[in-house]
Amino acid sequence: MSPLDQSPAPAPVRLTSLAHGGGCGCKIAPAVLQAILKGVPAAAAFPDLLVGTETSDDAAVWKLSDEQALVATTDFFMPVVDDPFDFGRIAAANALSDVYAMGAKPILALAIVGMPLDKLPVETIGRILAGGAAVCAEAGAPVAGGHSIDSHEPIYGLVALGLVHPDRLVTNRTARAGDVLILTKGLGVGVLSAAFKQDRLEPAGYQALIASTTQLNAVGPELAATAGVHAMTDVTGFGLLGHALEMCRGAGLTAEIEAAGPALLSGVEALARAGVRTGASARNWASYGAAVQLPAEFAEWRRDLLTDPQTSGGLLVAVDPDRAQAVLQLVRSRGCAEAAVVGRFTAGPPEVRVRG
View (cartoon, rainbow, N blue to C red):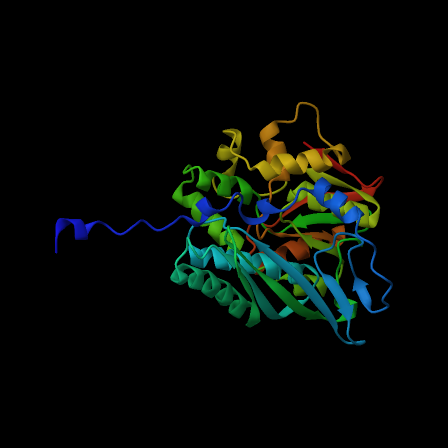
């Protein structure tokens, strides 16, 4: 073999280099999405449609009978990490989270696949799908089909279906004045993913990123069956403030969020203080900042964390204050070690007030 035939194999393509965004940071900004949907005609009245698009809830819900309701959602995005198997796991956990947030158990998933076939080997694409299937198997839901296209950027996600008893259905619009707000995961996924793209993420931060984003919110159905739990959503692309604001608008209440209440993932505070953030964080604030009251001289890095887009983030639970400690114990016993009380709901206009 001549020396010319011994050139090294090309380095694997970084998945994140093929996408202009990643994870739930790809979501259209809330204000832009609202403008788009404003021109969409409202759906006709269907008596069995228990949850539609009215309050920006996590999934649609259709009543099948007095004993069962079908929960249906879809979620997909571009890579947030370079490992194809982990990308698949993260995307699947994120999609299933919307089912759990309604109090339902997943029963079935369909894959949504868009891949640049001229840039990625089929083995890499297969690993992405295998990662998604592994998480669905953990959730007890098969990936039973799907659809694929050749696209310029890699995209993966799921249509996820679940079942819930109509009496156990939990939405984002039924919080009550006085309820305590509990967040089941730490914040900072967007900051960690931004640092990863900038080659500034330490190994501990990367491990925290993977551990958080691949952890299923499987405690959702248990929470829905727990006395005192009144409302629930998951915190994803719009950040803690954005999803808390959706709950405020649904219930007609004010949310008071403690700035230091949420736990932060490993290394997040130092990175945020150093100015690491995603573009989606700034877009989120531009979209809904007018409905948020901040303390005087509030540090910008703290605001960035409260608007930080969370990929496969935690559940945000509104619970009767007398039951808050029991709910905290439940979620922590299910592996949510960073669960914390982050605020409360009060009577008032639909807005968020940050304390501390």
